[in-house]
Length: 102
View (cartoon, rainbow, N blue to C red):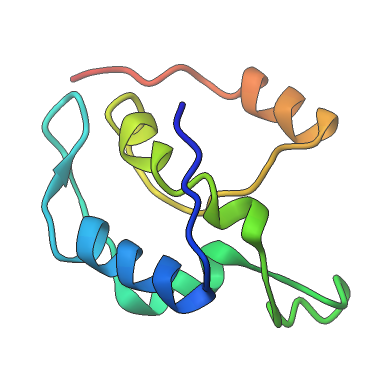
C-alpha cells in the first residue's frame, strides 16, 4: 500500500478533505462511507496524555497511511481511524468477525 508523503499538517488535511470528504466512497457491498472534516483530528492526532485522551499531537505515522483508507474500506464498512497497529491491536483485529455481505 502506498504511503502518503506530504510536507505539512495542513497539506494532509487538504488531501483528506479533497479525497475523502468531497468524494463518495463505497464499500465492496455498496455501502456509502461518509467522511467529515471534523473527523480529521480524531483520525490523525494522538494523545500526549493517554489518560486524558486529549488528541493534541498530529500523528505523521497515521497521516502517511491516509491513502490506504479507501482500499481498506473497499473491504470493510466503517472508517474510524488510521493508526499503526501494535502487536496487541493487530491480534484483536485478526480476531474480529469477518464482514458478511448481505
